[in-house]
Length: 60
Image 1 (tube, helix red, strand yellow):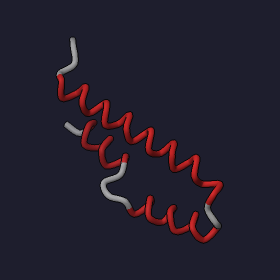
Image 2 (tube, rainbow, N blue to C red; image 1 turned 180 degrees about the horizontal axis):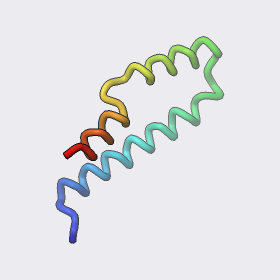
Image 3 (cartoon, one colour; image 1 turned 90 degrees about the vertical axis):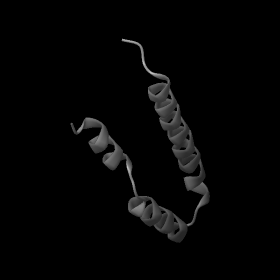
Image 4 (tube, rainbow, N blue to C red; image 1 turned 120 degrees about the vertical axis):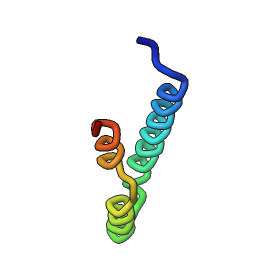
């Protein structure tokens, strides 16, 4: 069954998020320990997160 345009768009958004996360990973070595901790805390508190999206996609 072919994918709808909306499904393809959503998959492209996911690809964009993955690119952003690779950029974050590339910048990690440039951060101080304090900055790493602050960025990690910010990421942990971000809502919605990937687990929320997976749950929405898999819940009927």
